[in-house]
Amino acid sequence: MIGEIANELSKSLNNLTIGTTYLGITIALRDIITSIIKIIERYNLRDKKVVVIYDDIDKYVGKHDQDALMAAANAIADKIVHEYIPRRLWVKVIFAVSDNAATRELDRLGSKGGYTPYLLWNLPKRAFREVVDEVVMKTGIKDVDFDLLWNLLGGNVRELGIIITGYNWNVKAWLQDIAINRIKETFKRHAESSGFGSVEKALAWLIKKGRVAARDYGLGEFTGQPDAVEGVLGLLENNIMIDVSPPGVWRLSELPSEPWIGKDYAYQIPAYYWAIRAMVEAGKANVTPEDLLKIMQH
Image (cartoon, rainbow, N blue to C red; front, side):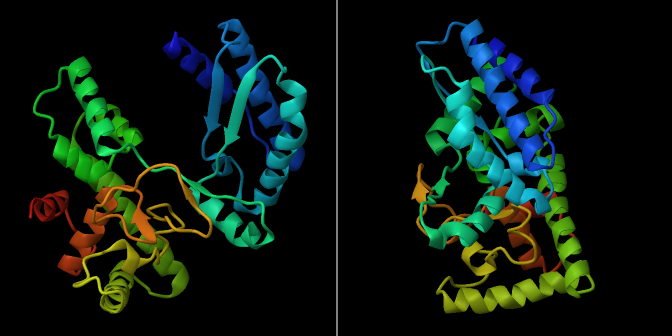
């Protein structure tokens, strides 16, 4: 039944069009809630506590429409939830924005009070192993290296699904596309807008900056540590890195003690760390998946 509900909810949400105005966004969010209520009642879930998270909703509107998005969210909280969710149902609907958008809003509104950021990390190692074991059992795939998956994904189930369904377990192809190419493209866009002129010059600047930061922070030799990189060159804006210590943050899960997680910054997935590290050690952006895997082995 869970699968049926998820599929029906997914179809309902995919058919919605979110506008870029206050009214358009508000209507779309209202429709999402009413769709959820209909599904709850159809499957007789009135005695259940239902939490629905609609993630990364800011990606459906332009950056210049963030104010409209926030205004619509406030309208949802103040009026529409009470108006459209019957009292007999226990429903929480959470409209989540990307961590970068949330951080921007936190910087803008944090000093005004009444604003609490929550950090929810990927699955812990034990739970992630259970997921991988279940996938292996159901698919019959052999020779799955769990330690490799942990060191590439850090418990990220979404990327695990992409490796399986999008790359047919071809980890090297996934590393090239998702880790190496994405970082190079991020450096390229930043280099073009910031006057570096090339990806290699941007990387050279990062290495120089990182060595100074690593020395000042007592991190030893610079290998791409997140607290020494600090999300520069567009890495933070493109969600390759995240700020894990914004003011007043409440952590809903444990951050594992791993090289891709620092005190203030972390890489979204470990593969980004290994790609940056390979580039730093090679002194060039054109690294290969084999380079990353070789560094991980040592």
